[in-house]
Image (cartoon, rainbow over all chains, first blue to last red; front, top):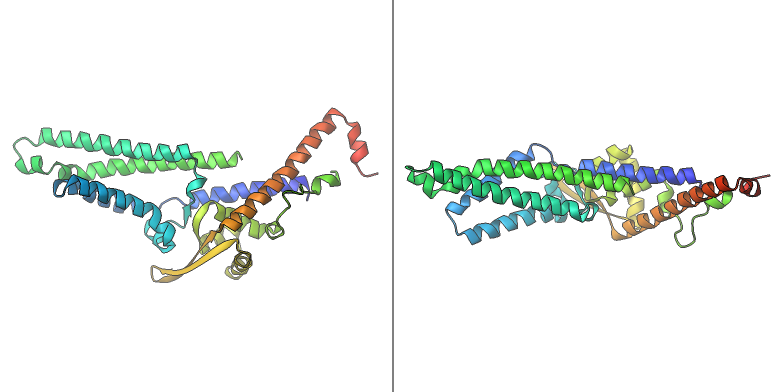
Length: 164
Length: 124
């Protein structure tokens, strides 16, 4: 094989991997569904034990990550045509994604609870159900942060691979 | 170009199955994913359904890919993923390609430093 052919083949491999990265992006119609599910889970804190809600949240996140890997047919729900291999993304990109999500969740949750508590004077129902009142904006902010962090992580992965 | 560049290093021989551009494209695409839809591969690799099925069948026989058939949204769908064997083969193939490209690059640098080498290695 000639060196230029080898280089062309390597270029093609990198190009195909970038195509796979783009194909793994989640379609827009899935995000409203995720916002609603996130809001519902967040509001459960007003009605169920916090430990149970934390466990449920963890179970949902794990299901979202691993169920499509076990049952690829589920990918249709998220509008994905491919699921990105975990090891394809550098560890620091994955950590960035997780940290951004956790920070957004903690910060917006606390801020919204504080805000509803302040605004809710004179409204006993609002004081008793701060999570229900704040659930939609919290879920919206968390999902927006997740989408942004995911895009950044994907770009990091694509850049890293193209430099190989 | 000297014929010596065309020889891949003995420890990383080129994979004959991946010398076909279509098969290489399929395995490269799949190597970045856990599962990939049949239609997505077809669209990106620019093959007809039957040609892709044939290539996937060849790759599956060699243990490079796994195929999962199911139904989604009331329609039959096929999902494909790369096996560990396929990833290993692609990794070795990439190493060989890089070795060929690097060897040519280094030889090119040497030729620049000593243009006389060109006359020794080149055809007469």
